[in-house]
Length: 62
Image (tube, rainbow, N blue to C red; front, side, top):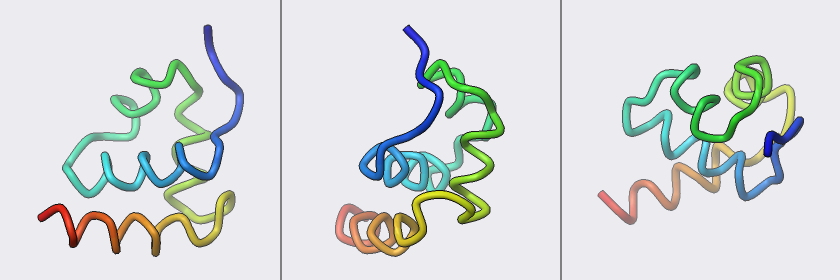
């Protein structure tokens, strides 16, 4: 089943995957979603604030 947009929590996971070195097409494939949706999260066109939450979580896990 594919989705058409991310939830805020999924957007945080997109950032976490991005920080870990995954490419946009790999993240999109994991969620079965269009690469554009991933790009919109990473360009902060959608889910503004998810980057800050992900940065905080990422720094705690590192």
